[in-house]
Length: 238
Image 1: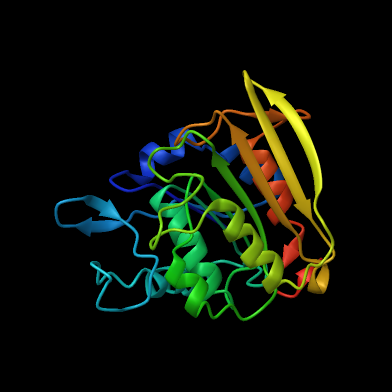
Image 2: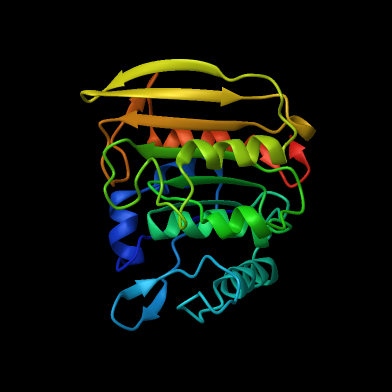
């Protein structure tokens, strides 16, 4: 199962058009879900990536919502519950980090795009297993800055460091550079984590706040994400 979440103010239909993974679903026998976020007054549709606190302006229980989706799928379809994956864009990418911290017992691997990890997640993350994660961010993203927001959002490199530490990865990254559509993509690949987990950080130099139109060795972003996450189940490398 692959869950793919839209950004703040967006719709599942629009995100499906921007990040259409139906070809992968047909080819690789995937149940593909594009959920729709609830309305937050004054901001439109949204995802709540944080646990309840006095600083959280949303009371939407999106962890419960995702769990209910998975329960419904388990009841009505023959899914492999150990192979549920999550990717998303912008505010949806916030939720991927939240799921990695607060619902990781239900989801095997993660791929946030053009999103950030809250500092408070770093302080109270309750991830229940080593979690492989592929992180995609542009250096010119003004909405979710690559260098984070002080006191609010972690810099992307700090988020990657958090997950390498969580996975007990001590080896330095292997760095590769690619050119695609006038952009340079720098990939830092950290491997050797517990249960074969990895962390890949994709730095799109000059990239904006988008679902990236990139191609690496014949694979677009959709395929890069699927080829990464599908290597894992909740116990680690398959």
